[in-house]
Length: 150
Image (cartoon, rainbow, N blue to C red; front, side, top):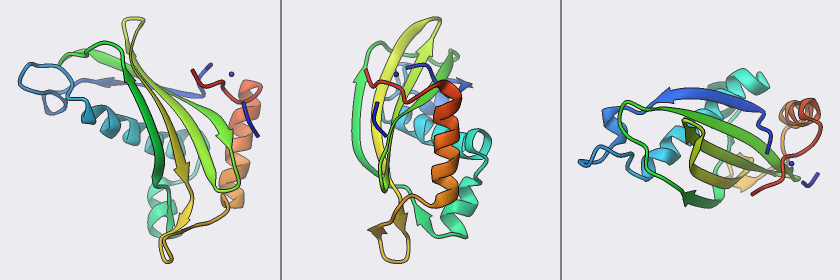
């Protein structure tokens, strides 16, 4: 399935002191920490698949194999960011996502990521498990199709 971004999963987060550098703006790697947490929340709440169970009990990994970020404007401590996630492609073992961080209607960061499902026992890619594929396809269908990456 290839790809439009309406976003399938959004939440608001507070920019905390721990996210910031001495200038009081978000230190760029912290966006990846925020986005990773957002992906975990999406699994738990959006897809209905427990992320901790998926990784821990099922021994399925989701390493990021491709990452592209555009930093559009700084974010400051105390601001509330809206994190948004959309699925742009579902492959045999890969899931392409687009994530955004915005505040007050202004895009701060745009990130395109590719995650691959792996076995944590062999560290090799595996086909997307059936329940995850079904949840992804349901998520995409609810939005009327895949999101087009920007």
